[in-house]
Length: 212
Picture 1: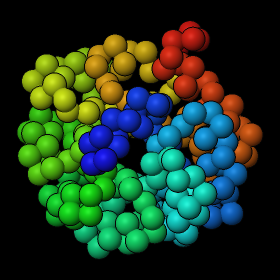
Picture 2 (picture 1 turned 120 degrees about the vertical axis):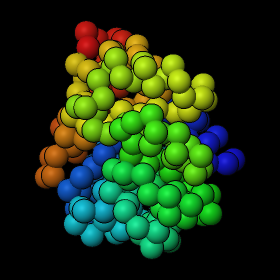
Picture 3 (picture 1 turned 60 degrees about the horizontal axis):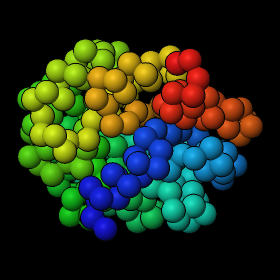
């Protein structure tokens, strides 16, 4: 299964990416278990977390059915390091052609950060698997709808940044294929039980089973 098919399948199972910024290795497995129990299939540990490769390696080994990877990937050598840790996902806050090319070479799912149509088309042309629309505070649902109208129909759009349960319905209606969820799901040191409660609330909001 190629990277696009892997991402499409993961988003079909649960269209929310768990962004675990600040996760410590000793928290990795309990938090990942809480996410798995809540239906999450996409887990991202940003590289500016404590010992992120250790956490990524542990989660990838323990949860082989999940798509596990790194965020805040800024350089091609980091892509290589993340791949060596067993990850399949590379997420960046920006669009770096070199990072995208290295991820494509390693057949990894690559979500570069873009904020404009120009960046979006360039990232897709470089081989990006999908697009991280970042920061979402600057890309409201109306902007997502406008991008959806001009980008290829198969382009996968995932707004990220400041998104909580109350934003999910409007982004979904605008055409987002998924969303990256950070502090509304996890903050450094948050107990796994609290992460699970947040995860259940967020997945329910996407499903429309609660007032979002």
